[in-house]
Amino acid sequence: MSVESPSLSNEDPSEWGCLPEVPEVLDGIDMEEGLSNMDGSQRLYRKVLVNLARRCCSFMDQLTDNMNRGDGMEIRRMFHTLKGVAATVGAMELRDRSLEMEQYFGEGKVGWEGVPEPQISSFKMALNRIVNSLSVLDGQMEGGGAQGDASLSGGARSPDDPCLTKALKCLEQAIVDGDGEVKVCLHALSRLLGEKVKSDLYRELACHVDNYDFEQAALTLRRLWLVLRA
Image (cartoon, rainbow, N blue to C red; front, side, top):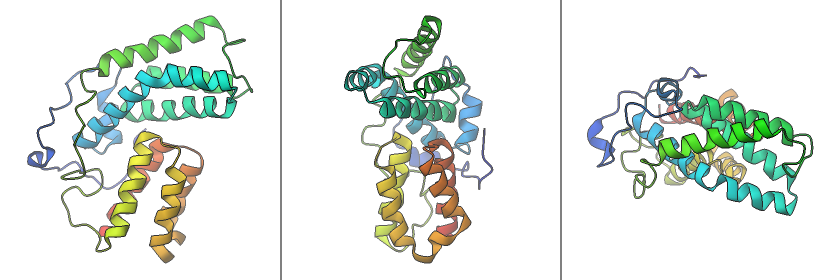
């Protein structure tokens, strides 16, 4: 699922701070696929893994709340976002089960009624598998900050405009988190890009955001950052 983009894999490990490395094996995750999607960036991969761990831990509680409110659109968005983040890190079983749920709830359902029990059980098992697998990582990104963060800056020079840098990092974080504010962040960035919003690369990014395809949006944003700092 990797999208071709400029390589950022030559990171300086001295910039990684005291964060432990990702384990060599994580149950339920194709780490080779995940690292490929991150252009080999260990730091970004670790960041997205921790995000997925936290998302999975709170997923069922948030889902129940949305079901109680009858918010079918938010339920479908939850499964869609989980599917994208899971695919990004290489959690392919969770991606497949989330896709099944997204399709069921795309039919206007706001509860488990009518969803086959085997599919419900398979989804919950895939979810719990990832929660257990990633539990060792949760909490390790606290205080990680932007210093030495290769997901955008990669230790290279930043654009001259600090407002542009802030807008890029805001959008990146919203994409990584699958945040509902991602479109707000994109709009803020567009106001700072001027004529560059007419570029094919920005239009591609906006299209991915509009479709809530955060996996592709993250990769396109990194390509846009490289073009801006060139």
